[in-house]
Length: 463
Image (cartoon, rainbow, N blue to C red):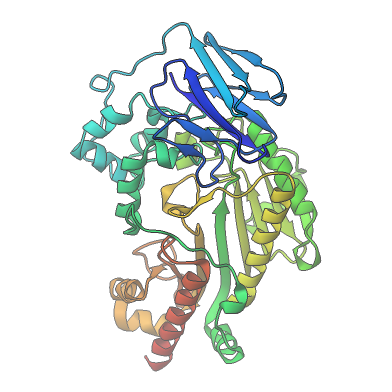
């Protein structure tokens, strides 16, 4: 049995300690505040108005707001939790449990991994089955199992990552395999640290460059995902938490002003006319198909409840709510003024964060992973900055393969009209974007894209 201790807004200096009851792993906290738990002595630092105790794997929680007197809370599964303030001023937690939890047979339950399974997760498990044995009976603080984390990659062999996080803590709970996947995908080591920088004033792009880009670029788009700390991510959420996410974001988006002001459309509450219009604009995200990671990892449950789309009047700023991540924030416009697009995106995502903070929440973030997302492929910045760039002469001269290799040498990715390794779209259009997500800041990644695109334009003009 494991115990979860999580909280917000408790006066600093309050500690909780397990004084009775067997636990199979240290107490863990929902909050990502540095120093939230000390594995050595099983002490958990509490931050919040109340202390939240939950039994892992039982899907239930209880808020203990009154800390003056001893409080006993009974939870499903035969667990009783007692919280009492001893003379020292810390809070002692007494845990009792009756009954046994199901134990997974790590050998008999090992997933079927075939030659068709391409994901880094499948390859890691196949190379070292002990990893599955290590985590088969380990759950995250909110009760998410390892089998649930890897199910998408088992059911959809074509996926490249093959594991998802149902809450931010999953990256720590399943650290060994998460580190392998992240290093395999990003080349980012477990000892690396990530720095964030969304100061658009630090981005270098001159008016002359904007004029030059406008001649060759059809459109520019910057998007990134964010998660709200303390709430389950889409693969592991329930209806209440999903609706809480939507409520928090609807409130934040309702405060947008100026060119960011717009309308929120709940996915299940639109008129046919509104739905057709959003579909025509390419804004509407659909219920995932069986081949989609969302369907296989559990993020499509209760569709379309508590999902929605926000866009501003000019349709240059868009937010998806409760798709793969809690938040998918997108800034876009015709032409090649990358700095303007980045400025709009940065202002919007920072504005949402301010609104969340006023409600006692924050983005899920740590110094190693940066901004935490459902899929390890998007951790760090979660950012993809892209332009639709016309390169008809360069394509004719180099071909797809050589052009992709050239982009790769500049830290960029080139995609044709039908995705990777395909010919360009109309007028020789390629989607050019930053390749990395983590280990470099938002400003660095966008600057890398600007510098690389300028070199490609010079080569196009010289071809």
